[in-house]
Length: 330
Image (cartoon, rainbow, N blue to C red; front, side, top):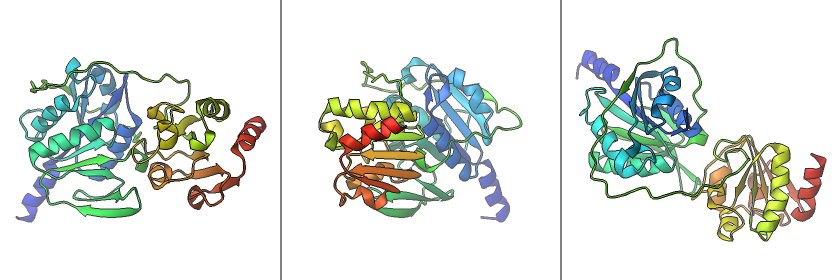
């Protein structure tokens, strides 16, 4: 390949970024995925789906690095059913829609939505997706954790289409504005042979900040004994700090709180400015979800608990005495 042709391919290949919305705003994890997409250093086409897509599109069009915003507002995409979303993503990557051509990279947040869409789309395209990216080295080389974060892999792909999901806690949310807004274009839906239907959802309502994006998190473990103690000790402290509430898997499994609050390898992976672990021993699976927090405070009566190995501040003692005292002093 001549140098001139190589430059042409690099110039005209695009990154397709699937962004998730909540109301009229793009989710924090998707804004972090956009930061990763910019590091691939190709023009970015943003894809917004569902009834809120049109209202969220103008703010996305103003972001630095966005060349075009594609919108599909059909209600079939409202709940991001992967069986509906993946065929549309595949169609765009294949160039079957004249609104976007020469897609060589696909980026999505490693959220529940992203984890459902990317393997389905990659299977149809016969490429190997690279999941949970925490660093972009170049358009074909990425860094990702494995073995619950105990090992870090550098992965290089030779696939013509590079498909990645991005760990939101590893990248800051993109906020830089462009000098001019990118064009917004409506695209047609895809008639997928989808046998899945949306039935209902039951969401926990809370006046606390969202766990996925909170700057401060107060998290409880099995040592809190029961739901009554979990609520009575953690809620006042979280209110004083303006913090979100999290939990270990053991606390969730024992019914102390809703599973949407679980932090860890099989829960939410977060990196707040301050993480307070109360009565959490620090199993590998839990540490994988919070060890990138900027400051970690651990409260536990067992000074041999693994959580103390990564804690910046450790308090050894009875949490039923320490937590109320801490709350009172705050």
